Length: 316
Image (cartoon, rainbow, N blue to C red; front, top):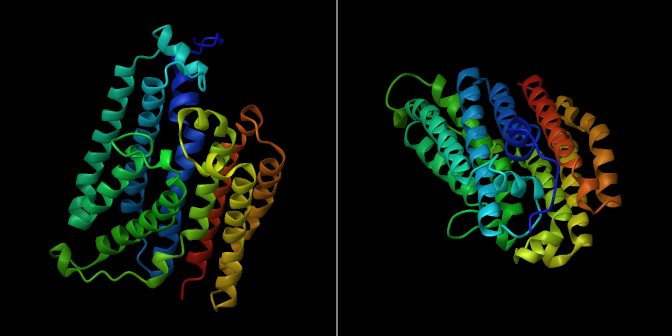
């Protein structure tokens, strides 16, 4: 039985419930900003590859969100977790076939950009693209949806904190390398590329933790084993706090280890992060936590922008 809800316009339906621009674009931008800042630190900043990779990453991310919603509507038509979506399908404002077409369109656009990036970076870009597709479309879709098994948090940390940062740095460095076959350009990754994005990646994971807390009752009914379902509200709140602590302790650790004081810039975003932390400690229901998901995404975006600026200004 679909809950009766006020009808939404098609524009509101796609932007508020499907596209999530205030959520998807900031999270896609976080690792790209960090990778760009690290490239500036190392003297290999190239804006063209950065912008192309950001757009391709966002399109793949959006395709994953569309896939997630398609899966929810198709597999759980009688579960009123998202009554607006179910109502839109019932009154034919939204068709599953349209959602599938949107997924294909996003992937085709990402593929077109990927071909340009493939020309820049060679087969390494293909590997990066396949990893990105698997993590995005496999979230709730595919034969083995990893989010349903409680593995989304480490996957997100790896993707947004490591893989996308390394990819952003590599594309810039290889684009500025001497002309010739990609395997002869001699691009070397600094050791920091593998860990410098982890603090910002932790904040992206916290966006997911808020969603898991607010949706834990629905997830339990669907048989999903997220952290909030398996170990409870207290565990998820503790995870949120530890990830926040990691994000804001990391700049201090970098400074103590000899980096320039500019790397402390991300700490300024703590003024934005504190109210989110308080909200997660106070609320656990969907209506109360719903506005805090995009706010947490914006914390990650500001943190990453400040970190990028700090890395660039700390250039040797």
